[in-house]
View 1: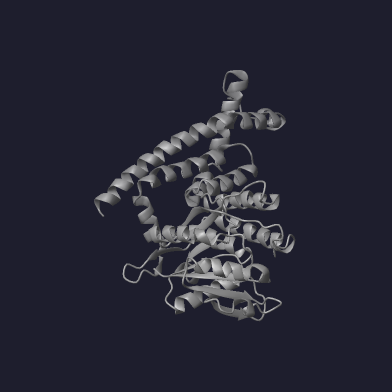
View 2: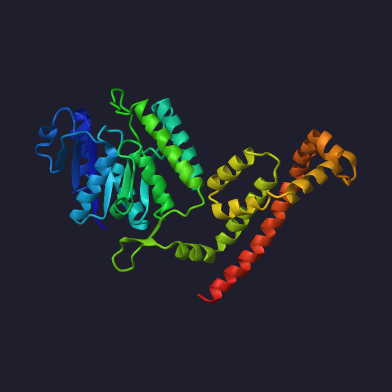
Length: 381
């Protein structure tokens, strides 16, 4: 494993030199990538043993990181460590990122900033929690500091995938796709410094708008019952290789925790399909499937079993019994037509009983089938 420290720079001339000097205390290989700053910062780095690359036009931090990954690969580096040029990161934490990367070489390592409420702006603290919510919804995984720019990227992770964002929101997209594709994300706690005169290039309107568009896309994509592209390291070269859908599915079925997860996925689909909340239950289905990282194909398939008249009829009968102490036996224009609103209320009331009962039965049935299938796959492995 070989690490290159990358310092993306754009109009941070006041802090760039000190950041580069601090990095060199812990790393021998470092490169400053200037993203079209108003004034060429090269003179500031004279006498400092760092490489320097300047782009004439500002293209965004994401574009710089991707170019840095190609630059690193051409020179034999396996990982790049990105550290912001504004001085908010402590270079002394670089060894922590490297240690984590050596233990988990194919994961994206994120330096989770230890926030002090007195020093950190409210906007940064709110953005961190808000971003964490969306990532949890999109991946079913918790990432405490999705917006941290202090990271260690496996070069191949960046180069084998397609990224749409080229600016600030790139770091969010990269983390979500790392989780989707099987690389994974690991966080290590790091310090953070917010100097009084810190310059931020975050645009409240433009960057928040881009983040909104990105989160909308990622959330919709997460809800679709289409498997995400998966990668696994080649046993010989170590480079990521795309894995086939069936290969991933069979491997997942062999995992002991897949039995419970698939049973929960089916049960959640039945529960949402049975509950008498039209339209709202679809939102519940997708939200829950994303939040708990469920098997969406199973959840949606079992939810469709409840579309027919059987489940609503069971709910109405249960609701009627709760109201009157006996079941509804007459089905005519009076009971189904004139008393329609009463039947709707009984449907809602009864679904509160039927939905959890059917979900529990479904969970047990799917769990038993999953256990039998799991044993069969193990025996033939």
